[in-house]
Image (cartoon, rainbow, N blue to C red; front, top):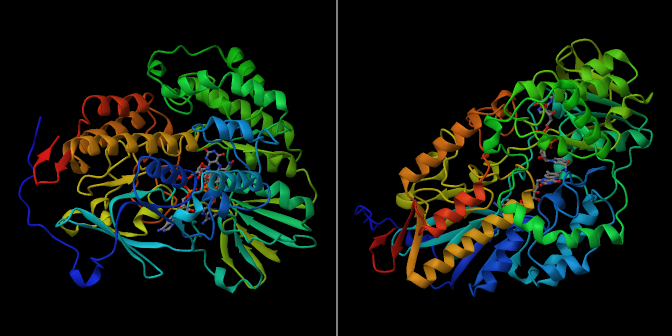
Length: 555
Ligand code: FAD
Ligand code: NAP
């Protein structure tokens, strides 16, 4: 079927703002984390001239910025790796079941060197705007260093968790000591010896950092607003045999990714039985002993049915009460206001045990709110806590933060901010109606942050490369989602989420951690996402509209 785009007046980027003699690139890739690096590799492989732009001085993304003590992956290292290169797998050895940040960063650096990606990237350069020029179908990308690049495709690999959130707590500017954020951690080692350290935030970052800080600090005061479910990692060394076994099962693993339901809600959830409580309990015990976040796929309906989820919550609360000696601290650490798994499950190394240390105090902000920061610490409703250092583990403006931080303008000069004023809207999380040739790697409306994010990045890059090759074969100049396809997809994303327990938590998945952000459930949590994307492509990219070099629009 062919549909003509209604004849709109062609807008163009004002000529004084564009260097029209500049080389026109095939693509600009923004971000050099796992997503951006793979995009650079694949786009160059298919013969596109491509430039990467990265705000940091080096590759790594998340793993460049988040260097706080204790930071490591929550998906086992063997899986939290690229899947696309057998050579890479053959030459790389992970030292631990859950690798620490430094090792993951070394891995990404190795990939960048091994595949000669660094020369493609302009580091310490932040994209400030990207403007689509209706007149010639090109994007003009500008940076804080004055670059002005023109490209046919704009690939936003800017990360779902790359804009740190520092809450605006009264008096924070008065605090005289150092203030650190887990997501902007200094490169030089931070010495906590003899220091009274306050940590605000008990999500995955806080839960990983607190046990490590407590090992050397004089005292750690943890300011907790919402307790979280956390599973022990049971981290330990990996052997050569672990790698050999992993490789032997690799083809089956790759195949399973095609219909992976990890952390997502499978169709069988609606009809799956509710196992008896004692059967569930034993299963959760086995998973607790095994370690890691696998509790999320203990049962197909664990994220949809309170009859299953509640037992899992009780189980973890029981473990917290068993572990933490002080009964009030144990109660305060027990999550009670949300189901398990509907915020990303935390995976820790001795988190709950840390509260048995004499140098660790938990302040329950629900009972004892912070009134203000002072020059010497924190004044709560009940007491003054004297501190030498403050650590914010307060998360991110997630999923949309990095995209909306840039001034992105599509057809007719429409801004992405405007298009997403009521919450993000995409088709398949890959593209946005009205923003031709713009792709969002792990964009809102895709599984993005659910499950293993590296494999989600890979899937998006592979899909878009196939799409670009399809365009090349067909002499197609632009691609963009049709408004109706986007509307249907967003309805589907919301409908799937509404059949789950996900909306019951005030999580960053919903954007509620950022004041003023629209409350919209952003990730896609249905199963079969890859199948949907493949089907769209196989059926001739249904829901996408293409434009030929000579005006005509085809679908
Ligand atoms: P990022 O790694 O965030 O890279 C995006 C890059 O874009 C950044 O380097 C940023 O500087 C750059 N950028 C953004 N805006 C601009 C701009 N305007 N101009 C130029 N550059 C820009 N996921 C898992 O699946 N398993 C885990 O165990 C796991 N652990 C995590 C631990 C932490 C501490 C955090 C914060 C996240 C974790 N995640 C995990 C999620 C993690 O973000 C992804 O796994 C993955 O690293 C994301 O890769 P990315 O390339 O999509 O984005
Ligand atoms: P987060 O999950 O958003 O947690 C932020 C914490 O800060 C929450 O406890 C939050 O409390 C608290 N907070 C925010 N504003 C506050 C305020 N004004 N006063 C008091 N407390 C406040 O952020 P994160 O821990 O950085 O993790 C974000 C995501 O990154 C994770 O979900 C995960 O996907 C990824 N990550 C993964 C790992 C890993 O294990 N590999 C490690 C770190 C991060 P409320 O809950 O009450 O809002």
